[in-house]
Length: 379
Image (cartoon, one colour):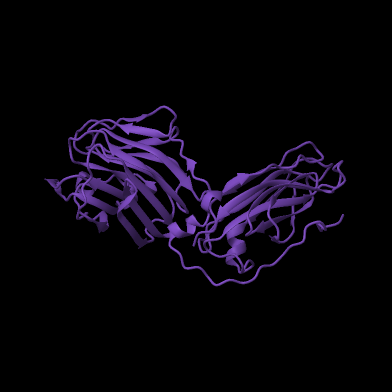
């Protein structure tokens, strides 16, 4: 059986100088093509610390599941998300729904467990309690041995503790009944946090730290209610789009991914296609030139030419008659990091699609097409 796709010509690109960009600038390269996705909070979980015999927090989902109200003046608590937060931009709005009280609101990220994460907290006024908490924003690294719970003496003091270090702090207080926008851009080793009021930047921190290089994102609240966390979005998450071509066995291929694209991270970014014809060759094509939705070969071409490609792969699956047990998978990070894709650099927005042999297809083309995937390569 032929092992080439004569209709598709793999193309190379003119070499370009390396880009030196901060995470926010890298993700901005995606522009409108990498649209912000609303975050569904319905499967998030409450992490409650029992510190001072205050009531437990009450994280009350609001209609639509894209906002949550923490309504109780409670012990410290985290409302933790269900997705990996690294390699993307997360933004949304916080608002204290009262003009009274003066304690902490914020978020966590890089969450490894109850005692290990990055913490951004924000206090309205100075207060001595179990140590001194100074008004303002703080970025803290919580690292309790063996992942045990932090104590009140860890979470309250601005100066930190043996279990908490504080690489950034300012003395800007929050104001009740005011909307604040928070933006987190985080790639392994670099954290960028921006806080805005009415579009005006109050603070922008870029911190180089590699204590945690993965982990979930969530909301944080300590002794401050009610606070509304709403309108949170993700950007930079790989996005599957376009339509796959139904194959000769009546199956529609499915495209999935795990991880995120990185020029340096050793973790895999696997792009996987399933429901393919078994024991046939296929190839992943990719392009710097954006998405498409063009009729092609009895299906849809999801990429703008010209293309580049990885080596041919075998779909595997059963060894008998043709069926839909085949699959193809590429670790795109390994492809980048072994030097096989010199034109791919941190900051690139790429689109990719699998082509695979389907010699029995009644349209006579001899091949099938999956959906497309769009992603940003972070450092």
